[in-house]
Amino acid sequence: MSTTHKAHCLILPFPGQGHINPMLQFSKRLQSKGVKITIAPTKSFLKTMKELPTPVSIEAISDGYDDGGVDEAGSYAVYITRFKEVGLDTLSQLIQKLRNCGCPVNCIVYDPILPWAVEVAKKFGLVSAAFFTQNCTVDNIYYYVDKGVIKLPPTQVDEEILLPGLSCTIETSDVPSFVSTPESDILVEMLVNQFSNLKKADWILINSFYELEKEVIDWMANIYPMKTIGPTIPSMYLDKRLPDDKEYGMSLFKPMANECLNWLNRQPISSVLYVSFGSLAKLEAEQMEELAWGLKNSNKNFLWVVRSTEEPKLPKNFLDELASEKGLVVSWCPQLQVLEHKSIGCFLTHCGWNSTLEAISLGVPMVTMPQWSDQPTNTKLVQDVWEMGIKAKQDEKGIVRREVIEECIKLVMEEEKGNVIRGNAKKWKELARNAMDEGGSSDKNIEEFVSKLMTIS
Ligand code: UDX
Image 1 (cartoon, rainbow, N blue to C red):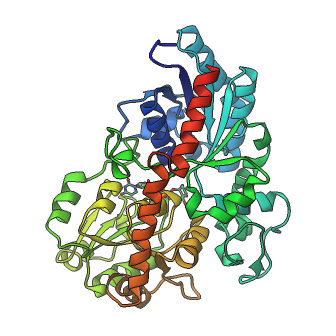
Image 2 (cartoon, protein in one colour):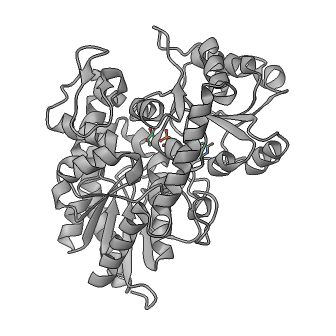
Image 3 (spheres, protein in one colour):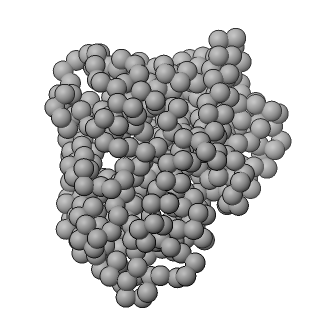
């Protein structure tokens, strides 16, 4: 190991944009505290990256599908089984290789969707840290699915679910979609499996902060010693103490940074609605059309991220005529710089956990349109617990209509009722910063993690 580093963490992310972003940012924070970092993405995932981070080393490993990852496997069930078989070897080989070249690893930070990583850590006598990229409430729900407290699939759409530790009552429609829809049993199995050998992990880290989820974090602490270390967004945005780059830097898509920022610079303060559905969600064509008209009818300036695979679903003439006066449509943007921009007044979001936490950290109120996965639960928290946004409700066909979208945007951006939501957004931003600031709840946990690593190395 080099003389300047006392500890070396190998980071094993699950191959997804929403999973790699928080782990990469956490890595950069560890690095700023003197820990050496090597990130081990899968080979196929690395190939699809349009942007790579400069300050950390990357050593790709095989998941058994070096050409196309999950797509090549054909299903998550096949993929996750093969990744385990191959990954046990390829991760071990990487650890051995780093040892041989004088740069031994002493800790593996892994996404618990890949629970077998803890076995590799044990084999080599390394510290293991499970890193949950989703929030504690969502993890609590998966935990109780594992324990059989939540039955799969729930029988009624609006059945109340009482779970220990939660700060609000939830209904079937608020639980992660994988739990509420019977056809996603392999996905729910993958998420429930996160707990299969969690007791063996030396650390359990969560991308959230204590003040945001106090009750459930305290409750889960009776079962697992979970430590919050978030929000993991670049420190530049939070406390300016650390020199840092402004973006995540490991992106599947090329952000149209100049175009977005130049356009935003020309818009009045708090006048722009930012719209994005993250890296995976696919909207139905009918939903795209309703959304397009909702934006147009709201009469707000808007910046809308429409990934190139989604663009054909836009209504004809939307880009040339309807959007041209008030809107800018881009295929990917530097989201953190956008959310931080003074012209942004609201975020219409699918409520992926990273987007939600970024909006919280940068104080941007939300209109939510959850699609799948943990997004319904995140939405519930945003609206009913943190009260910094409002859900745009679907009709019986599962479509959010243009009138509802228009009404929600206006409520959050202009109406008296939106005052509370806008005020709470400022409050949560402050609390997120405090958590990461020196001596804050997350900062203390990170310090403890680093100092223990330094001691054993
Ligand atoms: C997925 C799941 O859908 C989500 O629910 C889960 O919590 C994490 O994994 P994704 O759908 O991509 O992630 O959403 P999200 O978690 O919000 O992550 C998207 C990331 O991409 C964010 O960090 C966001 O800043 C970034 N992004 C998004 C950009 O940098 N530019 C964009 O134009 C859009």
